[in-house]
Amino acid sequence: MNKILLVIQREYLTRVKKPSFWVLTVVVPILLAGVYAIPIILASRPIEHAHVLLVDDTGLFQGQFRSGRDITYHEAGSIEYARRELQQHDSLDAIVYIPARETTLPRDAYLYYRSDAPSLTVQTDAQNQLQEILGNSILLDVHGLTPEDYALLTSTHIKLRPQDIETGRDGFLQVKIVVGVLLAFLVFMAVFMFGSQVMRGVMEEKTSRIVEVIVCSVKPFQLMMGKVVGIGLVGLTQFALWVLLSGIAVVGVQASNADLFRQATAHQTEIASKGTEATTQYEAEQARAAEYEAGQGIDNSVKELIEGLTGINFAMLIVLFVFYFVFGYLLYASLFAAAGSLVDNETDSQQFTLPMTVPLILTLLLMPAMVGQPSGSLSVWLSIIPFTSPVAMLMRIPFGVPVWQVAVSMLLLLITFPLCIWAAAKVYRSAILRYGQKASWRDVWRFLRIGS
Image 1 (cartoon, rainbow, N blue to C red):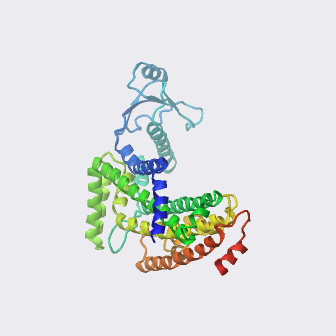
Image 2: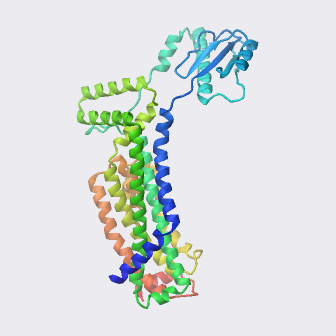
């Protein structure tokens, strides 16, 4: 046991002391915090108010453009006058010009500006209003519908809100999809990255003949386990630092937008406490809808994002993430170690690593189908099979998974990873001192049978 601990210590300290380890440790939380904060910051920042001149030679659009919180439209009599005003006054941003055409309806309009193009908000608003007013004219002339009738038709929307019937919490499926896919992809990358480090470490020691000296005092199994556990601890250390630094960054974002997060948490708590009673559910939804309509300067989608994030049990996610990373890593890292002992260079290792990693790659390829049906038979089986469960189960967890499925998945993974370590140890012990011979799958089968 002491020899295994020495190997673990060597593998751990060698990698933790590398500058690349600390660079990656700091960069990832910054990126995660940026992804978390950027939508909120962009939606919260004040938008510069724009002033736009409107010149309508057709007469169809006069008096119908609506000014808003971000844009004010001013009607001008002629394009020549509007051009002079735009060039002389810095407070003006653009001109919307609708020229008269021989046809009854105008086919194009122009947005003139000086040196800086107007914001996308101005362009989108002008385009939408042009289309809406033109549509109103057609409806009035052809179908006899007034602009008020058309406004009623276009402004009436109904939003389908998935909701848990037991807790009353909103589903926020889009947020759960993003969180689930992110967790699954993170485990996939971690298993590949640290498993590849194990394989490269074994190959380097084999090709440099250092392993001949090491096995004089350490048994091959002890050496393999030391490398697997040592590099795994490096991964856990990095993830722990990621969680800590990301948590600090997220708390900072929440503190700087305290009102937004307080409202989102209050909504979720209120709805959950009221359970499934239809009347209170309706009242809660009406109150939230009214607040959304008020806007308060923040995009509704950002509010929904925040409510979706506050409704996720991140403590459970972290615990399950650590479990599936640890045992998924031990399962695949032992196989990577066996593959490294069979070859002398990384090119030859592909014949062994590719078949081993097919289950994980297949799980990623099937991710769209799993997202579409997180409780379907395909998703359930992939989250239970040990070779695919580290990725598939983490993708499903944000959607809610029955306890028995999580228990069966964890139990099967706990049973399978020692068997993989045992098989990998037999191959490793037999192949680590073989040089200059290309191994094949027939050799692997022979090593598993004789173990020597």
